[in-house]
Amino acid sequence: MAESAQPAETGIAVLLAGGRPGQQVLVRGWVRTRRDSKDVTFIELNDGSCLENLQVVLEPGRPGWEARDDVTTGASLVVSGPLVESPAAGQPVELRPESLEVTGGSEDDFPLQKKRHGFEYLRTIAHLRVRSNTFGALARVRNSLFTQVHGFFQERGFLFLPAPIITASDAEGAGEMFRVTTLDWGRGGEEPDYSRDFFGQKAGLTVSGQLEAEIFAQAFQKVYTFGPTFRAENSNTSRHAAEFWMIEPEMAFAGLEDNLRLAEDFIKAVIGGVLEQCPGDMGFFDARIEKGLLEKLTHVLESPFETITYTEAVRLLEESGEKFEFPAAWGHDLQSEHERYLAEKKLRRPVFVTDYPKDIKAFYMRMNPDGKTVAAMDLLVPGVGEIIGGSQREERLENLRRRMDSMDISPEEYWWYLDLRRYGSTPHSGFGVGFERLLMYITGLGNIRDVIPFPRTPGNIGF
Ligand code: 4AD
Ligand code: MG
Image (cartoon, rainbow, N blue to C red; front, side, top):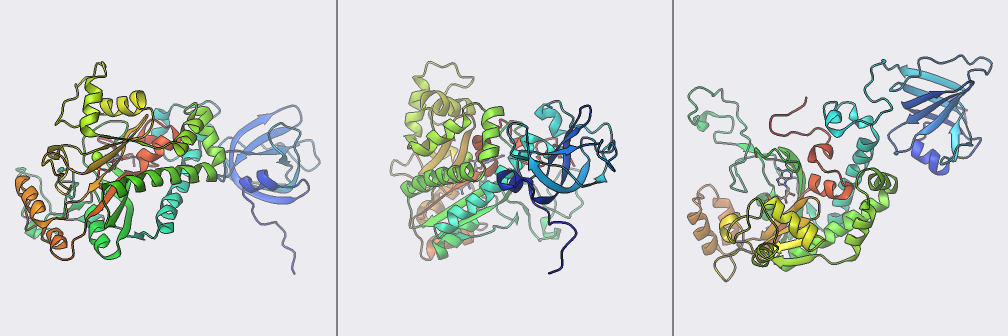
């Protein structure tokens, strides 16, 4: 076997976990910091594989080894040489390079110098913040959560349906669709003639893949969508993004109770999976972002979620003695201050709120026998508020017709949705999880702009 001149690249995570002194290694990465003392230079090198850096020790005094002024914070390097046992605390090994190549130097004004930057500033440098500790940890946890989501559903026999992104139906009926058009319209503000548009009718970006998931559930029973979702919601809050990811399972032959069980199992399984897969990054969030985060999440895994009806929730709010900006009243949607009171102060754990008044929920939710409420479920969690919204769906053709009629939803537009109730209808249920809201809960990061790499919010698209 021919001997190669260089060993293959090894990730820093692997070297710190099991690298042996004497082992010849090659690493590539970016300089986080450089520290010079009288006769050695310490470089903290990060390659994105983990939170920790590999310490690279340069000894300028060594023959043939000049002082490397080009090794500055932010520079990219390829380094090779032997690992040696590290005298420094907290790291088993360090690297004494025999060769060091600066592949790209970094100019003096590189913004991520030693001092810690505020999140707001970091948002203005979305192209560089990926090299910060917080964002690095977030990116790895986000990646892990993706695999947890697919793993959870695949293990349980759910079929993955990537729902279309361009669609003609506003599933939520909330008028928050971004328009997709090739028409040149503007003047006058009147509705354009959509028959001349690209699709020959009005189209937009999806606000939810639920209706397509319902179609699939009526053939495959258990399905889920997981993809980008768009809402032209002009809410400039820390929990709303114009582009986010939603996970939407849908089950045929299933009622609200099945929905609650699936949602609770899902939340617990993915949190457990991330804790197992990303102990270092989760430890960082616990230490630097939300004190007690790991204890909170462990507690979530171990205790059952609370379930209360909307009517009970309103009673708890009325009896709370709290001064809310908007007092709670039956028939009105819960405000985020209400959601947070219930989950954070009153019940101190994730809580399902079920059976909302029909007038504040979407047309597809199943009417309860009382004729006033629908079989809805929201999951509220401390610190974030609503992370899941779902329901049992109205599977009875006549009920659905009546409901659409009373909400001015055109049966011609939804003829295919009605068809599902005409041919082999089943009681069925599903829900939508906001991926970024779930990430906020798991990491303790308080703003949705910091859990999505390139956030889109009202008035802000970045680049
Ligand atoms: O409660 P929502 O609007 O429910 C639906 O869209 C249903 N079609 C879901 C279903 O039953 N299949 O949205 C579901 C979740 C919310 O609970 C929230 O976590 C998240 O999606 N979400 C947002 N996340 C970030 N930014 C926004 N603007 C969001 N709007 C909803
Ligand atoms: Mg909702």
